[in-house]
Image (tube, rainbow, N blue to C red; front, side, top):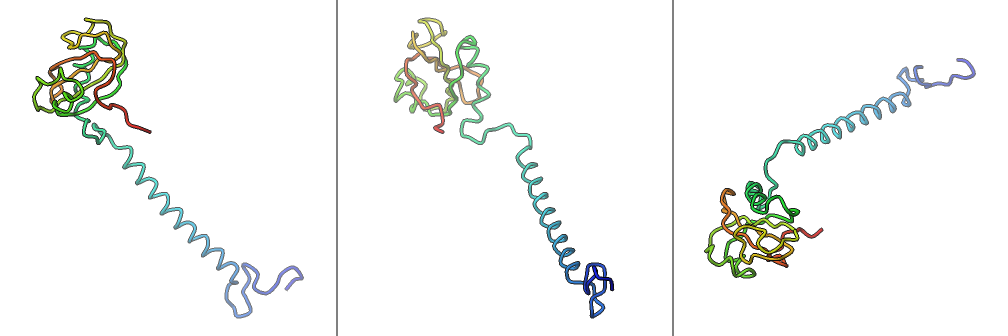
Length: 162
């Protein structure tokens, strides 16, 4: 042995003729680290694949009402900014907006836009305005506009609190 080499140095047989423990430990640590990295990488790829899949809903009770947006936007004449979309029973809307009472107990898609809106600007609106918000009630299928309202305050909560 030379002065720089010692018994059991990496690559040299130890006193008992076995590879040194230092080399064995580093290989075992390397294998363990590679396995952990493989598991973490596989889990991350699985999560990304689950999050990135195509979807056509927002997983909310109002998701189906987004089909009503074209009808509602045409009613307000592309005027105003979308505030929100809700699916509610007509009697729930009628509690804060009495003009909605004739819509009975059917389920509605209610879409709100922020204006301002002048009196008579929104067709068939009752009340006709003026007001800050246009609220459009569409049937549950999202095809037929049943009523529209121009109001100063929203009759329902359309935004989620952050």
